[in-house]
Image (cartoon, rainbow, N blue to C red; front, side):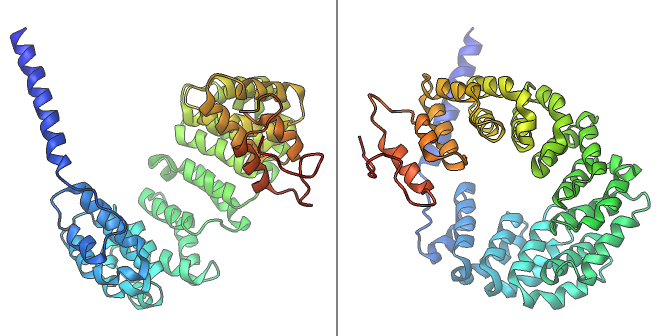
Length: 404
């Protein structure tokens, strides 16, 4: 017993000592003068350094004087990813950092942030990137082509290089991964790439790095919804890989339409899954299918009312609005939620519907969560005003908004 008590006292002493130590570190404000933010990059407090890097990046070109200090951080391999992102946000004014950012292309953990940073710095990066396309380091070589393709477009030789890399991966999982990640940064891809992407799904290297999900998402982002694509996405809802299943649900949401009606029964199973990300994605996909997902109304209504965290409930409410907004079952379910005890959820759902619904403003008045004795809450009026009827007519008979 004494031993346990000592451990508890030690734990409390550690916690309060940690709080006391960190309480002495003043919070850094994004309104601080740039010299103070630069000085904070050398702080012993990690949170202070993180804030300083973020705030400097937020200054854009006005953060130019911080470039040497950010370069030094990268050279020390200290918060290199954050420093590279900040230099990218500074833009062309950070051109002196090009060599050190280019070195970031060679490393697995910084290559894609470095790619984006060099693109944001702009034309001054091009000579270095052209040299990079000849690099023996494959990460640097591919990332250089990606950056140049981002600058010059999908008609460039650099984009074609990435397509060729994907087409000729020849069992090399790293080669496929680099090509896919690079092409993802150039998404949406042209529809004529769909056959190649579908063919890649069956390659052994896709299985080695579990690339199915990334390939499926690239297919969806082409906008192609041929019968072959639709059948493929519905089939992948039962794939062994978790990310492949999730990306298939998200792809159905991305493409949408009645053509995915056959997916409704499977999506309903995901709507009841114990993982929140599956439930939310399924609700969005059902909404994107539209009226052909009318059979999902009871389950979506249940999700809207009973979701423990609220986020899925909002997705379900939006889906109901997309599937059958005037269905009496939908309106009754929404009214039950907005008159319920959970006012935060009620307000969130009402607000999302008011902003996103295509229904007339008169119909949306029914979703005012604080309406009492025929009076309309002022915040609901603000939402309705923001929606702005196309002909600017008031939603009230006398032509005037009334704050109650």
